[in-house]
Image 1 (cartoon, rainbow, N blue to C red):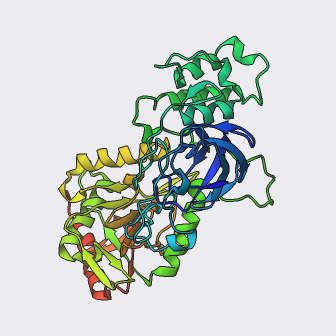
Image 2: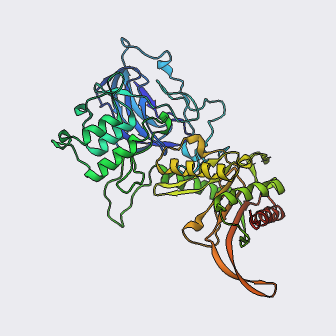
Image 3: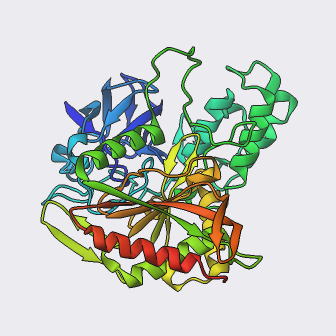
Length: 455
C-alpha cells in the first residue's frame, strides 16, 4: 500500500482545493493517468497518478481543501504494470505544513497576496510528479484523457460548472482534444438543452464560455477562470448557495489573503506617517497613478532605506537599486498584489500600459504567479473608492507601503488670500525594525516634492 501526498503545485501555497476526482476507489490506474483536478489560488491543474495499480482510498471530496504534503490518495501497486523508477520510495519532497509558510523570502500577493513560501532546507522545490514540472512556478497544464475524453483542466472545470457532459461534445483539437471553442459551440446548440446535468443559467453559461474562450491562445499557466454574467471572475468550484448569517469557508484567493495578512500582522512592527500632497500645479494630462509611481522612484533615490527587504530571522537588510512596485488590486475574489517591474526605467506611458496589463490580468484571473511576488515596495490606491488616511499592511520582506486616499479640493492659504487646491492624502506605513522615522519622513517628503511639480 502506498500513500500519495499532495505535492507543491508550483506556487509555494500550503494547500489546494479538490475540484473533481477523475478516478474512484477501486479503479485501476496507470502511471501518469489524470488523478484529480486541483484548484489553487491561481489556476486549475490536473494532478497525474504517481503509480500504476488500484486506487484503495481517496482522501477528500470535491470542495475539500487538502494541505500540501497531506495524503491525497492510497494505491495498491501492481508489479505487472509500469511504475516510476522510484515508485517504491517516491522521494518526493513536499512543502512544509501551513504554519511554516508565514516566513517567506519574497513577497507575494495575498491570494493571492503571498505565494513565496520557500522549500525546506535540503529539500527540492516541491517536486510535482508525472508530467508536471519540478519548479517554483505554476505547472504546465496539459490536455489529459479521463474516461477516454481529452481536455484541458480548465475545460473540464467549466463543463462541470455549466452541467455539460464532455462526452456529448465533438472534439476538434489535435489528437481529439475538446477545446473551449468546442464547448462554446455545443453550449449554443440545441443538443445542449437535451437532458443536461445541473444546467447553468443561459446568461451565465454564455458569458462564462465567451470569457474563457478569449484566453485559449494564452500560455497554459495563464488560462483565465470563467466569468460571471456580470463579467467578474468566478471560482472554478463555486460554493453552494448559503444564506446570510451562515458560516462559509474561505477559499482560494480569499483564504490565502487571510493567511498572509495574519502572518504580516504578526511579523511586522509598523509605524505610519500621513501627509497631504498638493497637486494644484499639475498641468492637464497628468496620469495620477503614473505620477504616484514616479514619485516612489524619486523618493527611493533620495532615501533607499524604504525600497528594501528585511530578513528578520537573520537580521539582514537588502537595499534595491531597481524599483519593482507591488500594486494592490481589489477584486471580488480577494486582494492581489502584482508587481510593476523596473518602474525606475519606465516613462509615464509605459507605466500606464503596465498598470493596465496587470489590472486586466487580475480581473480575468490570467495573472501568472511569478507576477505576484518579488516587488520591492508597495502601493495601494484605495482612494478610488473612499477614505482619506489609512494604516496599510506591510507584507514582508518589503519594509514599506504607500496608501493613497481620495483626492479632494481644499481651501488653502496663499499669498494675499485663499485659494482652492487639489489635495491627495498619503499614508506611509513602514517596518520600524528596518527603517528609522527620519528615513521614512525623508522618503515621504521626496514623494510630496515630486507630486508638487507641474509635470
